[in-house]
Length: 301
Length: 142
Image (cartoon, rainbow over all chains, first blue to last red; front, side):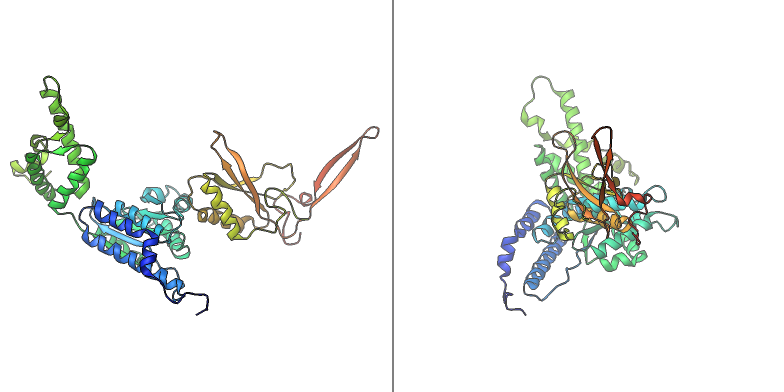
């Protein structure tokens, strides 16, 4: 150990100085549920903090691999958490800019020979210094078509992920089972990804809590009846195909707002007060198609 | 003869880290960076060939450095310059432009004098490099 190097570091001081605690607290406060995810992120943040301390003492030299995979059903907050992750990595000094570039297959893979490499590179250039978030990453790999250009994109990605680890962090996201197949077909990805984070589905209570947050942001609120109706709605909707957690909830609330507007417009005689304008009542939710199909006893949507 | 065009040209060659720092400064100002190359370094030759498109929407210098490395791989035996464009006035104007790559040997220029009627003399700058065909000017045997 060289004499000019400190012999001890204050972890608490690094923690305070990085401001990462603020982001973690925000994460806890603003995102409902997602317990296991928050725990994993705290673990990763702690690991990076310790790694930084170790580097100050000269115990570690290689930058750690930070590429991650986020697996979980749609609407479980993967993109939102990726944005927070970028903030955390930026605060800890592992990426220089802390912006999030969110892409899907279409942004990376070209339509004809020679189109893919420049397209992928263009995106990578934009993502340098930040986080590249590839949603539904398994679409990059299409084994059924051997002339698919996705493979070319994968090779460029792997090369950059390996060679420019301190310039860019890649987060792959998608459904769990399909990501699993994707990784087994592309072992290069699995070995370059350090952190696998699983996103659980939201429970009904959590979804209700989320609905409150969503509506509050729009200055709406649910009446007591509507809350009961929404709970019933969620239970039924969950059984139907294409249930995508918070996203389905948001769509349901958007449609409820539509019906509320229509109802107010048709029923109102004379002036309407702010109370009426911002309250979603049970009938706005109960008019949903989800209830019809359940009454008819059919399982289809 | 060392070509002195653009910013920093009287300084020693910038290292890659110094180039990276300059690029990052440009990006932080919101300027778009682009790369051009040529083997005709005449001072009045403003039309250098572009390497790809100007790079908009890039946050970090690493993105530009990738392109510079690619450009050097293909045209490492030519002059490469890096320019930063500011679009805030409503049009693109150059804020910074400097040479980031040059050939190993730079033959330089000769001053031609052509006598005209009476005591009139016209001067022109002749680049020795352009005596060879374009694309072969700064080869190994130059």
